[in-house]
Amino acid sequence: MEIHAHVILLICQIAKYAYENKQKETKHNSSEVYIAEEVAKIIYSRSTSDFKIADISSEIHLHRTYIPSIFSKIYGKSPKQYHLNVKLEKANELLLETHMSIEEIEEIIRFNSSSHFSRFFTKQAGIAPSKYRNRHFSV
Image (cartoon, rainbow, N blue to C red; front, side, top):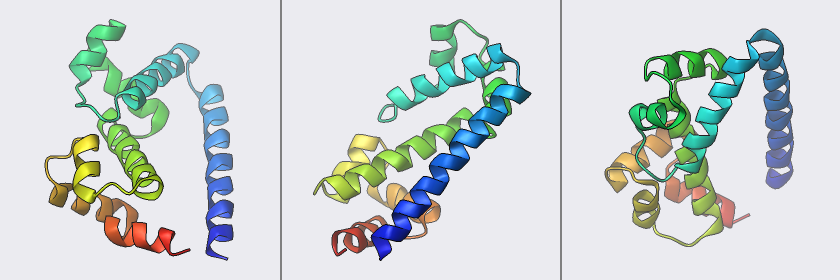
């Protein structure tokens, strides 16, 4: 039953994401959407590395203050928050699909410490990483 609820929740999130992206396309300048999407792709591809707007800025040849402005306008969150969300997504994946320790996952995702990672995960997911893993492996 719990898996069924997760599947429904996932479908709802995908539908919401698709709807929001369609709204973005109609509300925003297409070049701004393109820039934000390129920044998002870069951030996603570097989910397990350190994140610096200056690096992205030089890579796509835009001013470092312009990128967060456009990104926030399109995605409704800062590039930094998006990066943290991507890290959380990667942590979820590693917790559920591997038997790596919390410390190994923290190292891969590049948090300062396992306690920092655990606090972040708990704050975002509402449950400690070890409990999250145990809950899903026991299903």
